[in-house]
Length: 161
Image 1 (tube, rainbow, N blue to C red):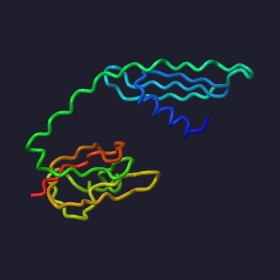
Image 2 (image 1 turned 90 degrees about the vertical axis):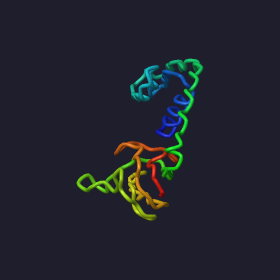
Image 3 (image 1 turned 180 degrees about the vertical axis):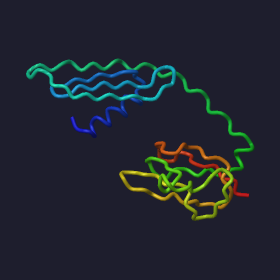
Image 4 (image 1 turned 45 degrees about the vertical axis):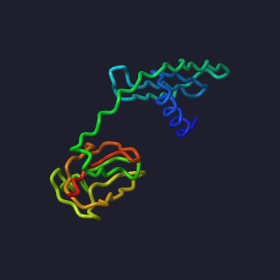
């Protein structure tokens, strides 16, 4: 089993709503545990252990439990609706600084112009400058430094006035 197969299995389990899946083959043993009912983060354990040759352990996959209904998204207030949301154009790790010893690109209250660098997102060991497509004032930074971000995830709220 290669890394891509393991990654696709992790994604499948996360989407299925199962709380734990164990998979054993002749050369690998994988246990995937997703967040607990308390809303913890997903945890994945991958163990490679030798298993006796000629004996293949059965694959144990618990039946997917029905997911709890999602709480309705909070209504966007009239105050927030006047702001422009700057979203992540790629998947990667969000950084507010160009390097650890440098100051942040922007802070709450910073005035930005179209084309200003707001942050960098690291994807596959490449650091991509994320530039503003609008001018205005940073109202809120929605992501913590060094956090993973998804495609189209909101990063900043900008007041264009």
